[in-house]
Length: 251
Image (cartoon, rainbow, N blue to C red; front, side, top):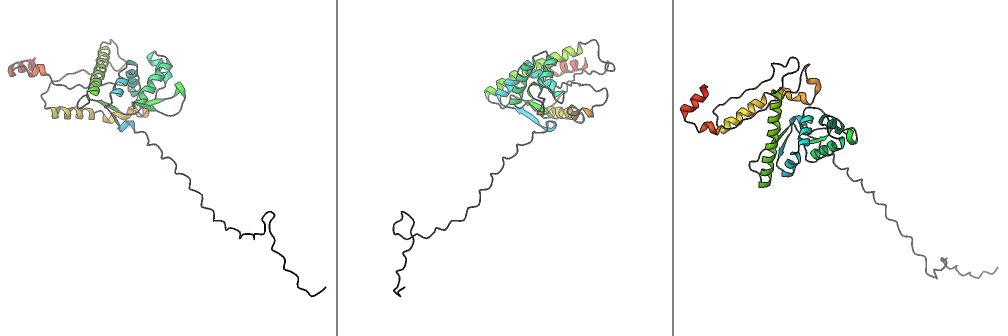
């Protein structure tokens, strides 16, 4: 072979790329770190302990919701039991389980009761959500004041009717023949003192209230006992002259 110089080979090109030189390969950007998983939703606040909570009624819708004979009866029953299902409520009240289930859901909607956990449908147990329910028409909007007065009247009528039927009984369970109490006292108090006396009387029941929520605390022979506390000014007596009041007191 001759010693002629051979032409340098042209740089290789990709098909269809023409004579343009191949561009330098692009550098890949490092992969970004994966986005962190979203934080889980915060756990719902635990239900308040009914032994230490109070429901203050201010919503007229909530007042009207409970001003129903079946719903008031359900609240009275649940207040004396640990849990209650719609089926059990129907047997106690002579109502259909479906009707009781509807009224129980309505009470739960307005915060009077809550699910106790477990069970489904009409076998779902319910329990009270608060130990006490307070109602006052004072310092309320007009609609709330009207609803509060109507609810208070229904509640008082049910309570007084129950008291009348209880003391009209001719027989009591063995051992309870002389256990019932009935008394009335008139004392002279200021508004502040009246509130203090009422609070002091309610505190007498404190050592026994947990028995409503824990049957194991109930001693043998214990039955649900209702005490009704009323305190109100006797304006008819206040209008009497002092000598007439003394005569009435002496009698």
